[in-house]
Image 1 (cartoon, rainbow, N blue to C red):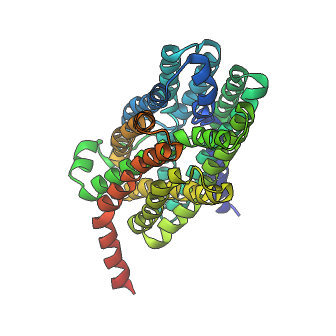
Image 2 (image 1 turned 90 degrees about the vertical axis):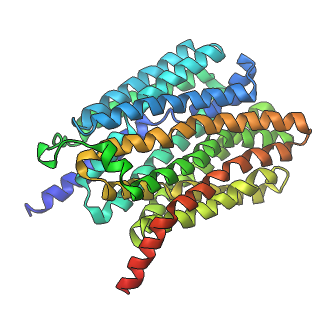
Image 3 (image 1 turned 30 degrees about the vertical axis):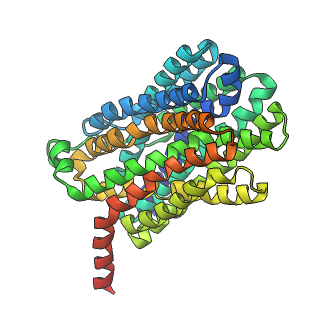
Length: 416
């Protein structure tokens, strides 16, 4: 009986980790849900809206670089708890103080910086507490929970904004994140500080001389190009699609946000399935297969603007699943390819490259949308071209993972 306690403690700690991170990540796509409202209120162009989305991701990047280095030197739990609290306070400040493009971009940058203290410590915590054979599945479950958090806020912020106003809706988001900070502080088991026996962190040498790790980081970067462009603009796409079918502005905003929330939300299932697939097929082989599927979705999705709604929704659900499903493979791969002494720094370098494109991709999408509107008055062409830009990411990711997938294939053949 005594031997079961560590496993039970690990399970309860992992559950608290997921719940606290779910609440702490509520802010993720809130501005996407508000684009139709604040664009009219603040007189924003699509390019300006894309810049605000990109500023939030830039804030994440700034924090990821700093936090990743700290993880090889200190405990993960305090970083997560304080980050969630600061995210909640930042969203309350956004609800009170955002008035125009400049205040909006500044405050979303601030919230993005605070949010950057949540994700990487959770990955390090999983690496330290979950057995190797189950890390892909655990990482997939964790990512699935985060995606559910993103989708949940996209759902209720869009719905509540038309009823109680977007400022009150954002205040509710902030309150949820403060609750998440309490869950992380009191529910997650405290891990040990990094052991000096593992050696001094050498993240630059351990990563930049590690070709497989560089392949993983390159593929993760390409994956994020597609994922965050798709997540950032799917709600405005659905709103525009419904308005083109005769829905009024309020109805289009409510239902468009709900549909987008469902599309993003099914990515949680994709994360879980992708994690299990990565444990069974191999990290790189599973990721390449899923990248191919998401590439096809990006290439065709915008061109379905005038297609029957049932077809749009069917493709969008597949898109929402596969665009996330390869995520667990990258984190699980780094956990195995990089020495524990430098894992935090490796995650930080992964984010340096991977999240740089999350600041660029939404802005490029918005600029492409504006440019296409000047070329021809055809909404299907506008969205088709913009989503097509996202398909470049999976192509690059498939190429980056080719050496690792070939090596995994040889291992499978030799063991059969």
